[in-house]
Image 1 (cartoon, rainbow, N blue to C red):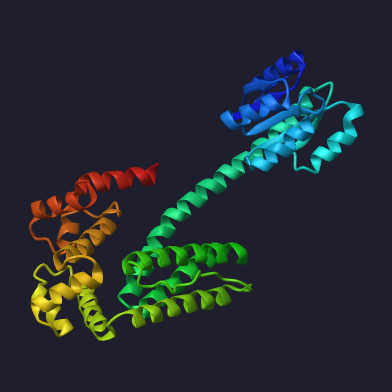
Image 2 (image 1 turned 180 degrees about the vertical axis):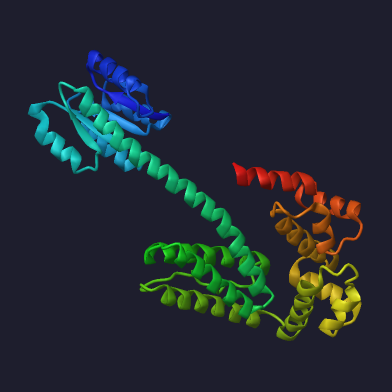
Length: 354
């Protein structure tokens, strides 16, 4: 239900409005009433209504002052003005303050219904936009983390390629240039946050990744890739480049061979051209986790991806990521994501069907 606050110093008008709102088919409910603007302000802060309907002429604080105060507080609500014929000039002034509409006294049911229908449509659209934004930010966090990890390991080409994929998908969604730029900035900002977290103060020179002045997706992509290039350059300058290249070779090896059940620390160290003990220390410094934990992460992330496919059996997923012993896989999987493979698979299936 959408919440309505009614403000008028006449009791019968408040009662009539509240009943008309309750009887309307647009999903509104009168959650509060006030006699003047001062009282209404306190209720606005407490109740945060979706719609405020206020008279213009009231004691203590009139409707125009109330509208101005609400706007100063930047509360997210629609406002409608109640006015008589003699108050039309005041109503026009209120409309310039961004009110949704005005209702003319004596109030007609059709007039109120038209207002509620219009406000309901706006509120529903706002809710859909908020939900879409929330979904995007969850996805965006994962994308930013993915880019940060690739950049931190100085797999710049992979980071650039992933950015091309991200931009291409967003372009295919038909987003206008301004919204596309905003979403790419979201990804870059979260990638930057991931880099700063990994660097622990060692990348103070990173600047805000803002995209501007571009109309075409290709131009925005070029700007985003330039941001990634600068970030990779700063990372290279901040540490031992030779050691980083060696660890990067080992990481690429693991990303290719992690599903082989017998992949070993010795094999990864050989890829890096280091002794096992030195490689083990450097690997943890550069990736933030031990060799064993890193391989488990690769395997579990891939297993989770496979289990999101309804046709994939849990045993097949275990074998596909290098576990010949299913109980060992199930124990590792639950420790990693908090659910057993079967529980995870059921949850994913439920999410898709719901």
